Image 1 (cartoon, rainbow, N blue to C red):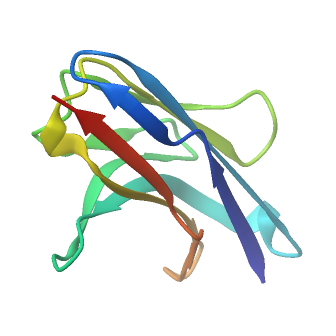
Image 2 (cartoon, rainbow, N blue to C red; image 1 turned 180 degrees about the vertical axis):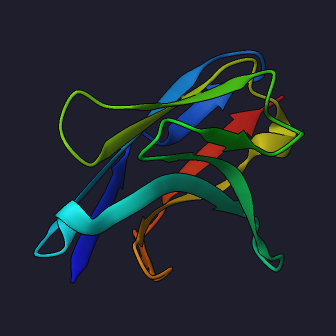
Length: 117
């Protein structure tokens, strides 16, 4: 089992920045292939924001690739999401996910990001 914990959400104004952090731990932590961020607006599906794998390859949603940066944290199995030039449409619950070898995902509880205009 892998535990995933997010932190760093909050309320910001349009144009401001925010950093989200995510840490994965547990008995299968060494088997993590990738970690990433997804977001969900109430009533809508959960969408990819950005992912990074063990090779350092990253993937971004088109809506954020010029404004958000995903990176590995200094500790093992941690990732950061730096979000710049935030807009009201970025408002969502942001979830961190850890993908282990074999394709199974472990999810965090989510952190709310609210951007006011």
